[in-house]
Image (tube, rainbow, N blue to C red):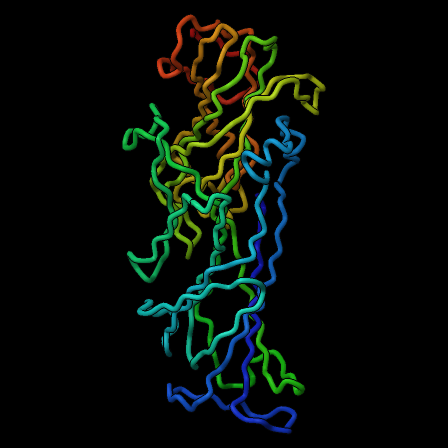
Length: 382
C-alpha cells in the first residue's frame, strides 16, 4: 500500500530581546544559565494520508466490508493518527553521534513547542496507539539501546503446526503504526540558515519536512468458495498468516529477520459477487495487520523485484461442513504476499467440487496445503 504521513516541522526561533529593527541579528546562547533565552522550536504537524494500492484492489476484493465488519474488525484501511510520541536526542556539536540522552514528548494535536540549545538533534516520531478496550498488543522497546527503538508483539493462544518450528503458537497482530526518523537537525545561530523572518512576531522561521511511513501492513485475505452449494457451512472465525516479521525497528523502518505466524479473525459471507465475472460465491474473509515481510523496509521499496524474501507464506482457515465436521485447510500464498509486499488483497479460489466431506471432527488433525491459485483445480484427500 502506498500510504504516507507527512510530518512538517516548522522551526520557530524566538529572539532574546525586543527590537524594532526589521531583520535583527539572531543572538542565541550555548550555555544553560537560567537567565539565558534558548531557541524555541514549534512543530507544526500536518498529516496527509490516503488508502491506495498500486492496483485496483476493490475490483479483486469480493468479501466487501459492511457495518458488522466495521464493528468487529474496525476500518478496512488505516486510521489517521492525531497523537504522536516524540523522542529528541541532543548530539551537541557532533552530527551522527551516538545517542547518550533522550527526551520524551507527547504531541496531542498539531502544534508542539519546546526549547532548544544550539547544536545537532535527532528526532524519532511514531503515532500513539489507542484501542477500544484500552489494551494493546504492540510493545515498544526503548530500553535495550538509545540508538534504536523496536516494536513487537507476543505470542497468543492459537497453535500453529507448520513453517516456524521455533514457536508452537501464533503471535498477536500489532496495532497500526507509523514512524519517522530525522537525523542531524541543526539549530543554528546564523540567520542565513532560516527560511524567512516575520517582523510582526519578531521570529525567524525554518521549515523541516519529515515523512512518517507505515511500519505495519494490512493484508485483506479472502477464500472464495466456488460451487459450494451449502457444503461448507461456515468457519470458526480464526485464521493465521505465516512468514511475517516478528518486529520492526522504528528508526529505519526495517522489519526483523525472524519470521512468525500472525493470528487474526475472519468472517463467513454467502452469495458475494465477483465483479469481474458476476459469479456468486461464498467467501471467508478477514483483515490481518502485520510487520510485513522479514528483513524488509517495505514502505521504501518501489518494486516487488527488489524484495528479498526467503520464507514461505501460508494462510490457514478452519472450515465447518454441513455434516458438522470441520477441517483446517492450509493455502500457500507466497507469490501473492511477495507481490503485495506493502500489503494488499490475498485471494484463494477453492472449488468445493474437488473436496470430499470430512467424516471425522477435529480440524487439528488435517493439514492440506493448497498452492497459490493459478486457475487450476486442486484435488486432495480429506
